[in-house]
Length: 280
Image 1: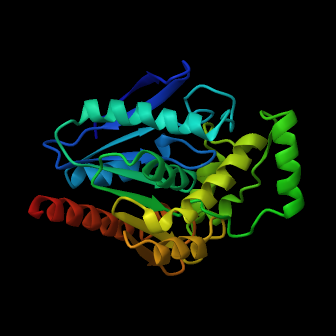
Image 2 (image 1 turned 180 degrees about the vertical axis):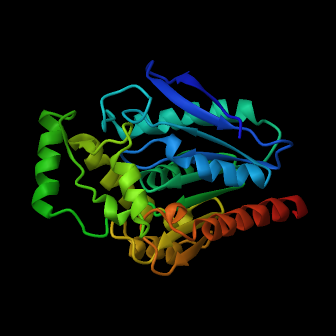
């Protein structure tokens, strides 16, 4: 599978690393946003799957992640991330100008694409959020959140460990091993970014009823990292949303043994959105 890599410059000069997997005669394009601490290279098999279905795939490393610039795990504001996605959206549109597009985000990326849809209402055929970080499965202690708010004021770029347990990513233990051995993966988040992501998760839930675009929420029922219950709450509130519940799956549904079934379901939802748009 051929693909292109390079860098874009965001609004403040930060270099954002991108990967572009073009499909031959594409029917649609998937704009993919990865999760906390990881990078776009972990989605090679996802892009390959969609390429084989005739969908191009474009992804970038968030600032402070992967090959992109910025302090690891830090963004000076949530709006800075939104403006990075503005750049991503603009460049992705230039790469695939003639086909329908979908915003697709995992975990933190799910938080980001939900907020981007609410705040920017982009011209896309739909949004997919897999295991979105709306809330954590085990909420942060109130004292820890209070300390983070204080620290965010005095030392916003102070980074702390995320304490993510790789065993919760997938029931396939090789996924955790590969994650721990990946030199581009990190386990840090700044106190300001933590505070703003938590706030953005609640903002998305509060805006669920008015969510402006067709939405597929994808979540494993046994996800120990991000809250399945929060995804269900969003789907129950939003007339635009559908919830694909995957019984027993962990956080990375695209990295479980049944990952092809998950991606096929996601693909079929996207195809249905293109078909319904064509018939409208």
